[in-house]
Figure 1 (cartoon, rainbow, N blue to C red):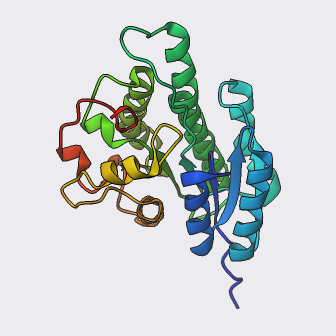
Figure 2: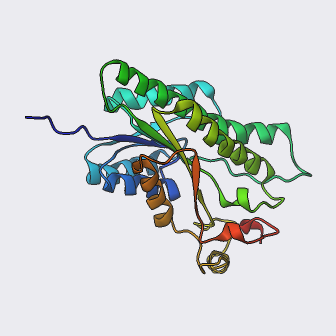
Figure 3: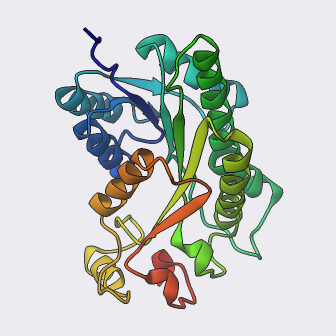
Length: 261
């Protein structure tokens, strides 16, 4: 009699709150054990863990500072130590601070590249090494996936958030490089939302107006983005490509970032 299948484990970065939390909950509903990464949001991370555990049976929180390379490199081994294995990484955590050509600095660029580009690459590297070890130990189905959360603004650029945009453009390029370098063990897929959640920079009324500015009359909801992440993790034929989940906003031309409109 065959033994029951082992639950799959996914690390979702920046999943204590907002969009990352919604992704974590959607994956837990789909049966994944969720490793909830956070930097400062400890209490919110514990709340997300509790909600995920009710859905999938196991979840745990892991703090890591993505500006610190050693902290990033230690994250996947810590997840493995808790769950015994990890099968996928969703790179959602992101630094999003405003600068433009006039205010650009090396300091701003380096901070965004460390958090938004370097950390996702290191986590993909660690997942690949772990799966190779499992394959060497005789596990036939030692395959996994990485989902990199991008941004529709890469296909619809404007002058705002220069360092952020450059860091996400580098991650989109890494999507292709990683898909080639880590195949066949690891698939790499991008998911690029449009305007999804409001922030302190937008009133609710203005957010709703901007959210409707798309060919479909609505941009992405957190449920739309989470569904795309789940699909990307499940579809074994997808790698080296990006799903734009934005109601078609990338097809239009915006002179400013939504938060500045």
